Image 1: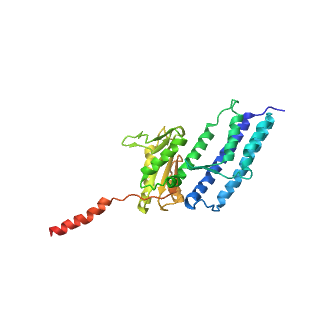
Image 2: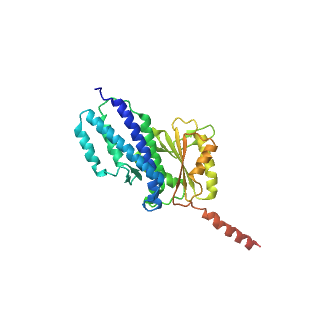
Image 3: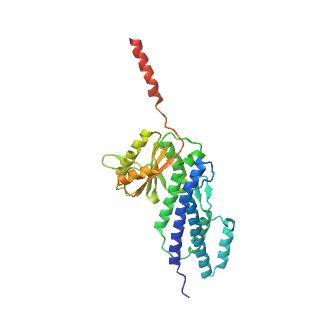
Length: 301
């Protein structure tokens, strides 16, 4: 009987874990929206249900491979330990659990399986798949960015501008990605550009736009396009997220995606459209000045 091929096992199961993480992200996005807009009520979503079925299949496949590996290398005790840890999730492989402080939903079953894979290969010299790890980290980042309305709602904050949104998201991201930074300058010939938030190890930058009117919606894409030109060629940032926070349905994600495609925006830029509470503060002083000026003219007559 040939030796167990750890390298092939690890590569195969890492691909499965990455697929599981992608499915968890898709399911979590829908369920966070349900929590925010429907008070936690479970709303039927055909795509979500399909992804849940697919997630169960992937997790079952990973579990089978781990059991096989434990049996092959003569560790039946670890196989039993794995079964015991998963016993409370029997028939619940598709269910996610909520981490409130970062407003993220995760799969506890995937977490248990990942822990056993890491333990199994801890003393084996294998080449790390940095690409998969980077993709998984970016999926987690995107999940947090999409959950911004829920984060603000939980903190009882109704933003009035980009700065408030940016501050709260930064405070959330710093717990998950300790190398999160703010406003690192990118120098150009005529202007210095500063991404709102950056995660250094992911080389990912996040730019925020706050939209509180139909007029702002018409110009917001132009602002993103200006940022795209400004950040082009940066060695510090390779992936960019344009997060558009809207207080109403002024634009859909399909419309924004279409604008990006028509303008041939680089694939390194990804738009994220979210909807939440808030209202931009208007210039009250300007409004008060109008009657005062009018009165003064009348008195001069």
